[in-house]
Image 1 (cartoon, rainbow, N blue to C red):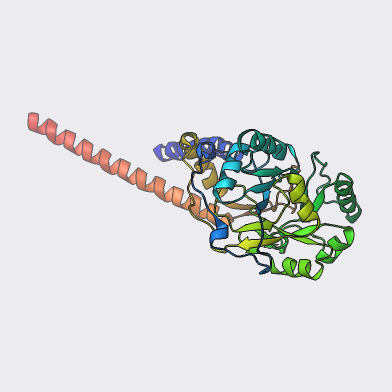
Image 2 (image 1 turned 90 degrees about the vertical axis):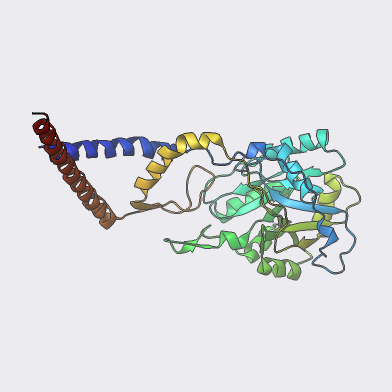
Length: 370
């Protein structure tokens, strides 16, 4: 009877842990890092130790990061912090390209003009993000709707045309990342990504030839082969502060956004590349709220460990680019209950052993007193 009570109590405790832990895990434990308290008080000068990829491109006055994010989409830094981070790593111009919106770039541009005038230039834009392609739409001040998750070729052509009609440019992002094979689907991260040849025919203005620390040699060669039609840009794709690897070099008439865009439009760019990345790199402070909820979230993560849930690449349109696959580890669940029974049996043996010791000791004490 006692064993059954212990077993029932154990199952109740497990169910309570599942009922509390999994919702906390699903709804999100506060992030472990508090990026809002980060500051960037150093100053890197990449031109002091790097030379442009084009050896003839020796005169330049602009060091551009053509792809970064802020808290207006999935970035970790505010516009103020993004500016401070960029200046610390040697950039004097950036293109803010938050997913699906120009609002982050407009806010960053406004802050730069008010607080960092003559230090850094902000060019507005957004990252058009879907399940077929990621494209930076630069030099625009109005968000372009992004839908559906899997646009047709004609729909992508219309996006490119609309950007051009607005006076902007279209840069295709991180093709190696987009075409990386995802398991267990054994397909590209972004399925049915248009080819470089298709994109050239559709009228894109250029390709991201360096993304974070990845040098896309195929896109670089394609841009070089079609240098009368395409420009190559580099982007940190900064979501979280880390090393900087590349700087697009431009020799503009002045530091205005219009002058920089004019040079990009006329395909007069090169870039600096540091494959090791810059120093210093700092860890963000811990978020103390994380410690409060992490134990419950980790309990949920533990029970999720009995199954693998594959969701694929997020579309940034409240869906995913691959069909969800869930694999339940039934042998692992079986072993969990087996070890649970073994544990209960051990506890039961210890319970009766110590009960016998206590009873025996009580009898001896009673006999000694009498």
